[in-house]
Length: 270
Image (cartoon, rainbow, N blue to C red; front, side, top):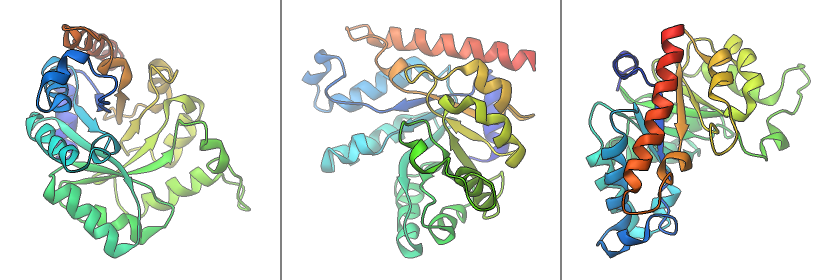
């Protein structure tokens, strides 16, 4: 999916919601366990319930590959079920030397036909650029994450006076452009968005951490929106597990709609 197509979907749906498909066999409603593939059945119902309110889905690959061959089959079937006009993100956080990175890119862009994949940039340029050579595909580089351990390295001050995460953003942005490169920026670091937008004003940001992790949609949008919206706000647990009975999908739809309506108001005010 191109940047133009993604922006068109955002404008059409008045939404920049991404639903994270972190589907856990231990958390899905128990009545689904009677199905041959409980996770696929769960995902299909979540997709049916939320597809009119979101512009992206983000399967967390760990929840699928941990289940072996069955998990990979579930992932493929889930991806095939997602409407083609919705942006797809393989949340894989891959990052390795060139030859290996090429194979990871082939896996997620050709074998599974995702629109994008998350990348860990620690090993440098040759671990990122193989993901940026596929037409219409995106690399989403970890920029500033929302987890507790982010403070271990990402805010370290370099001799230049800049923080490590700032160096990552500035350097990685040179390897691609705003048509094939996004960045992960955690919502729990909302105070950093203004500074981040000075470094990468035009790139899309994938933002986890709103909702269950305590991030504020209002604060993120205040500092993170750009002229093309420029944000994909991810919600996983708050939507997936909004309900746990036979009508769980209705609860998920309600949760997604509430976020979409808030997003619509924000977009209308800009």
